[in-house]
Length: 461
Image (cartoon, rainbow, N blue to C red; front, side):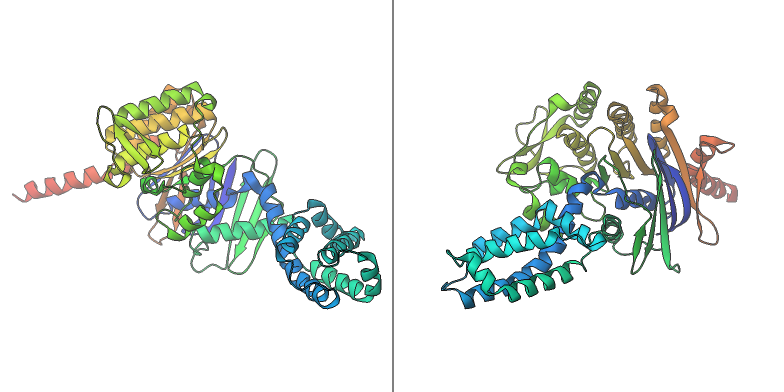
């Protein structure tokens, strides 16, 4: 896979390979995170797009039908002996119609070629709706008010013809909202009017164009693996009563959402009852991944588990008590969240996992542990990893372990920098003349700077 970014955030133009392990290295404020966020914003939800697409269609259809069904309700109250509204049954009937995939297809066919099947389905809906109020002689009621019924159907179809059902249009709108969420609305490079993303997978290149007011896709994105973003170990603190199942954990791995009250409330509303109970999936975890989990637990000298009455807690080996996340070091949280997520089966084969500076709270020894874990997980699951870093220790660990475990050919390393004109540049270090040596010198330059400070001190004496 490959992604090309133009005028997204701080990145004017960058082209990055996304096969295996992709490392984006560089100093602070050079745009490293922008690349991972762009991949996430583009591909987020595509593994469930079929369901999302029909959900969006249903939402658009329901908005029309709810408004128009109020006219049917008033008609029934005025022309039958009913003395009260049939709200619950009417809502059931409405939901049945709007969630009917065939009805959505009929509407789309009518929009394109004027197919009349939608009339038949609306007539059936009218009959069933009137039957809620008129127990007998429903057909006589319809025939007696056929002018109203036909007029009502014409109005409904006229409005249904205006709703958006085109898959490409709905998907481009969904992706635009995803960019807005991930970048808090600031996804277009300052001073530019539009952005562009080109995503190439095994079959084709899809082009996304974004402006402040519009978006467009050259074709629908077809991407089945999941995509997850670990922005900070502090998301470990958010695993609470409504955020403990696999689907709930997925909602935490989104940029700019940890410690976000609105997301927490939305999570509580969306997670179904089955997701509030943990289902451990050790039988689905590859043996190589089991070894990784054991390695992480050994490094932490414990592991996290969910307790029904207390939420997520960490227990050290040999300790009598357990610790709440707020009382656990940030380094432990980093390892614990990765271990817990894998153990719970959130990450599946071929998924994309994006990690933003995962080493930042880790001692160099634990950076080595974390790097080894990532390489082994990538190998066990066939993952695509996108990792940002400014640590020479962590980068060196990734390079060593990809070599040791035979996946060096899947390692891509890029260096992002900012020139004197504040333009951000990206360079493929695997193809450069001096390769990784040059990058290590850049990332380790702080040591040289400190040595220069000491040398200048004693030179003055």
